[in-house]
Image 1 (cartoon, rainbow, N blue to C red):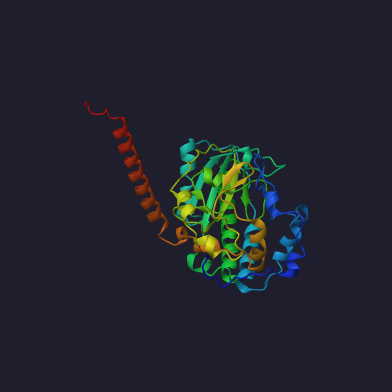
Image 2: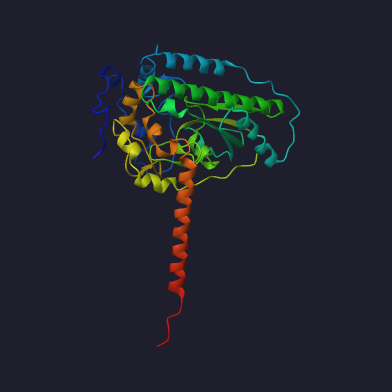
Length: 343
């Protein structure tokens, strides 16, 4: 039985549900589809009129818009989005790929972001009907303040989410401006609005951890409590490798986010989505609660990996456990291969 939850039972606002389209968001996402295909924009469209759930997206902004944390964060983010990029200089600066990638460390040291990685662009990471010409994707992560996000789904947490989306946008624009000053064209990609690029797949590819049961990335340092932005460029950065910390097995046996989700949107097992077996959050159950609480964020707040100081220790513990299992497996295999004693 799930734990007691003060947000259950949850009853969606009839005014919101009157705007729901006939098509399921799960169908748009490709739940149950056995063939691989490009993702389609299901929410956060730049133009809400372009998607079936556009009316519900517009309704989101009517929920407590004057709450001080929401109002202040939206104004700050808008100022960041409106700031110009640096002019493109020339000719392009030449550096070894590893040096380009190492240069991203300065943005972490200066507190502009908490993590950076690089992936070679994969066309599978674009939304249906979109194309990306650049060869590199620079991924940037900004971490939530844990105490504030832990108030989810209150307005303070909603404001924190918006604030970090603003920081992520600022980080992407800072990196893009720096590259343009180096003579390399660069395009920032920021959330939550869906543009050309899916953000989670390249983040997984370049070392931001593994996908968690709650549908968000779990990184060993930041847990699930962070936001992403990206920069598209042809500057010859060296890719950073993917990272695994045992998150997948951990999530298979952990039920904390599953129990904490008021509308029961988090499934206990992986599901097939556009030809891939993965953790998946039921869009049609999640969205009404998400909309009514300024973005919710309960699942990332309660994730054990998100608590400061826990992730790296947990990753180390899981690595030791995996090593012991490997050693036992090798010993067992060696015993099985040994010749039997002669009679």
